Amino acid sequence: MDFEQPYPRVSEVSLFDGAVTVQKGKNKTKTIPLVMATRASGITHVEDLSAPLVGASFTHDLLGMVTYEADDDNEMELKTLNGSVDLLLQGHIFFPGPVSDDDGAARVKGTICSKDLYKLLNKKGGRGKDDD
Image 1 (cartoon, one colour):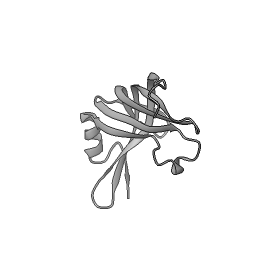
Image 2: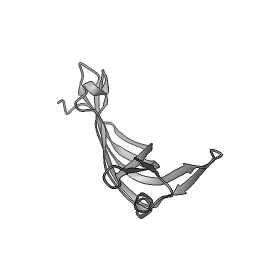
Image 3: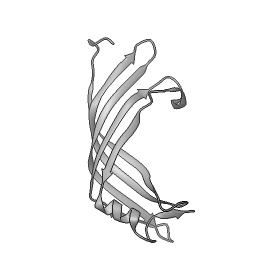
Image 4: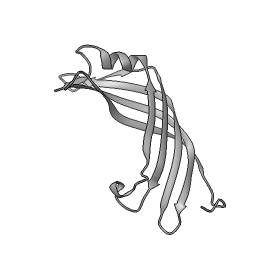
């Protein structure tokens, strides 16, 4: 690797829209929809000049986190969740091929610490989708 290459530092706001799923008993899971806004900061770097292979390492600080559910009229009810996150995005963020062919594709790893989220995932019935 050529250490004279520039390593741009990046700071941005990222939005994660997904779900947290946990095992509930032998054959059931519970899924809670989750939207998180984070402030990401880190570096990008060029790994291979012959092919545009760009890598990155970013850490994320939580700005806000909500969950939601729709009622019968498709009106969304948002619930703000308190907590903290420890997330790291690391790997290739640009690869000249499908993600399945990239053994170093970027992945988000980390933890979400939230009493509110824990209560939603562990309460009986109510919010969350129980799958059979």
